[in-house]
Image 1 (tube, protein in one colour):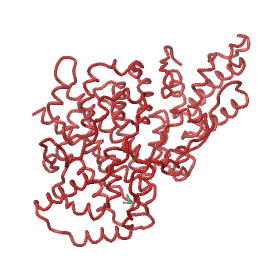
Image 2 (cartoon, rainbow, N blue to C red):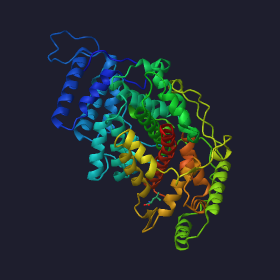
Image 3 (tube, rainbow, N blue to C red):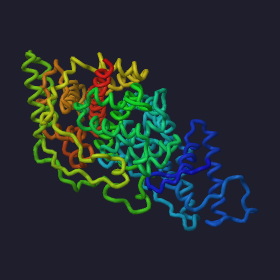
Length: 545
Ligand SMILES: CC(C)C[C@H](N)C(=O)O
């Protein structure tokens, strides 16, 4: 345990000492884990001997420190979390036993209750593969990797565990962005993650990265009072806002502003920052799209009885119109077949018209649900909180559609990313391909289904929300395969993820399995990420030429 603990007085942010202790348990080597457990055990024994007041020094028989009650108390939510989600059986069992023992013996200590509630409010916990269920070897070893990388087996990872071959790629890329070679210091990377997540008020990601920020030696003043962050980071606020909500407005002048002057951003740093921002904006969509709950140690819920949101019955918000019947899976499959059989020849002009039609229809979709009002602990990170998505079709600026054949990820984005921030292009490319091509040839209970058309229409529809047109694509397909309620869901998750409700999730893709809904959310994440990056990297290219 280290010196100078960082006391943040924020319920979401434990002190540095607690975080270091967790570090000790995150070890691949069972002997090292055992040692970490023994040392914590001695610390707790010291406390138990003294029941909250320092015991007579003759009783302390080991070299472990004597903890204060509040200090020990601060460990408990984390011990609870480990007792519920840790891929190492030894730690999980040990934590369970410890909590039970403290409940009996820990005079005055408030011991949180185990609730085993699962990662999502939308998906029953029995459906989610985790350490308690039988998961494949591959998934199990990915969970261990994630635990070691992030000091936890987080809920995002658990849900992505439905799709291990994607998860592998996701973890590798995120690890590279946060811990790999790159121009930005580690604590900056986490602060940028916080800034990105705050655009969608995503407390889940904000709290995770506040902790990582502290572990990377970040100054906790930046968390308490974001007004005191360095000017260099402040300069990123504007770009963050545009990229998150109206990326088509990004141009070379924004890059110029960041790179001008002394002690400002280098182009490589800008590229890493833009990719981090886009990565975390898109991850917010995944978090909300799948109804991911707060991590066990991020709230004080475990001291009180479960709330409706813990049990997944929180659907009080009325937002989507679920009265409209869905077309049903059989009709959908029939339409896909038909589209494949009679491929229609279209002119460029016709394709453009169809694209514009889908775009105009987007603007007509209802987005009635209200924005949740953020808590002060989130608001402190947000500037201009009213700035949000605006329908591309209703833009006031003279901006034309982005033509993907003039600037595409494969031919342009990929190489400029790789050139300015080595290897990132390849990591992202692999991840995009995994998400774009992932298929099990199933749809609900049906097998041997070619779902290509459906999946491509989701991807291209998301790009359409951002004004990106794929010139060789017939947008008529989008209207054939994506019904209004599904389009509304996709639009909400992509553009206003914080407004999504359980009811929205329940009322679309009715015959689909939960793992398939998560699959759709992976595509939303990646297509949004790629859309933002196309604009961001085009702006960088324009600045450089
Ligand atoms: C999103 C889902 C409809 C994807 C489908 N299960 C497939 O294997 O392609």
